[in-house]
Image (tube, rainbow, N blue to C red; front, side, top):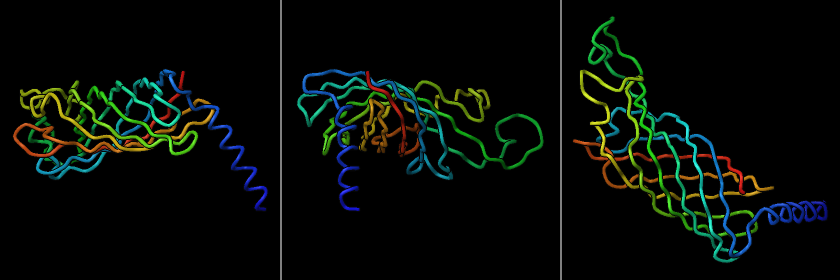
Length: 202
């Protein structure tokens, strides 16, 4: 049994090692996945987490066999759900409380350091700028004549930390983005987001 486990582990190491880039190489990695976002502090008052999509591309340069530096561009959703009084903003219908999605999509630009603790398995950390692209409430760009985007700062920063695992050029990435600074106008707080993506290295 012990011999079988040793052989299996060695085989997995060999497979993942074949997917890891060599020192001095540059790779591009398109990726797609989901985010699970929470809003913090006053800006997150009465807000529940919600799921959104994320997609983008990351370029990585391998400085040596252990260390790589990466720059990415993603289109990322930071959605939350709130239970609100519908009559307050939709201008008609039967007033009632309902769950409404606050849907915000950002251009996310992360710069990360990647350290391979073993072939195929990397730990990641860095800094990211998030530039607001669209903001909607219940699918609407405007509420009571006001643009929903005016509720948010045009940019906020986040600190991404996480890990990835590579096998046969597929990359499975789990990352947590800690929002820093203010994402909201007139309220403290930001967005924290857990993301899971699958990418492919070229």
